Amino acid sequence: MKIAYMVGSLSSTSLNRGLAKALVSLAPEGVEFVDLDVGSLPLYNRDYDGNWPEVATAFKKAVDEADGVVIITPEHNRMYSAVVANAVEWSSRPWGTASLEGKPVALAGVSPSPVATGIAQTHLRGPLTFFGSKLYPHEAYINAQQAGITPEGGVAEGSRDFLAQFIGGFVDFVKASE
Ligand code: FNR
Image (cartoon, rainbow, N blue to C red; front, side):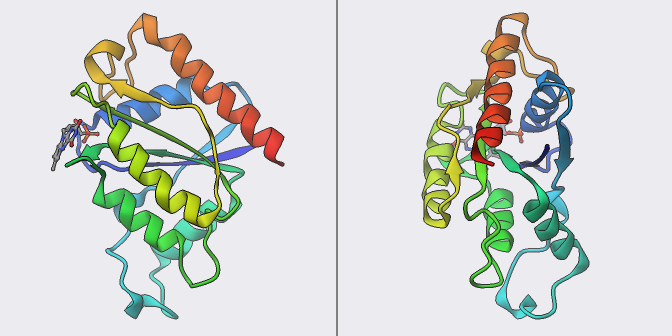
């Protein structure tokens, strides 16, 4: 099984990158994880239609080939990040070929605030519902201090089981969707 993931922060000390590393390290064996490297995508505009940059074509192909996608987003001003919004736009084009259509998708995110990306993720469910993605119903609204998330992928002992169950449950969800 192949699971693609995107991290919606470009920060060199990103907590969300750390959460992604933690999820990958806690996942069941036998799953191949592919980093979608969404930070390399230029800002989408429709002038690219018919003449996509190689990096966007590779991104679209990686999403298409994945059995499931995990979107790990920071919360910026109560919204998912512009990096995620841009990647979602690329994935939705050309018109009629939305790559997240029917795709199992899990959402996760970490922030230092008590909101813990819950509002951002709630917004993100809107476009995913529009695409008809198969939304994993379990929530991962992670507070960085409580869960001990570090940019290097560290997790507090008390949060390891929760995150392992979250990603393990998504793997089962993807299998059940096949
Ligand atoms: C934030 N932050 C933030 N946090 C939050 O919980 N809710 C929010 O609405 C916002 N808004 C916001 C806007 C902008 C422009 C920035 C830069 C930051 C704080 C944010 O959660 C924190 O910087 C995280 O560390 C961002 O994730 P990464 O970049 O560490 O992965």
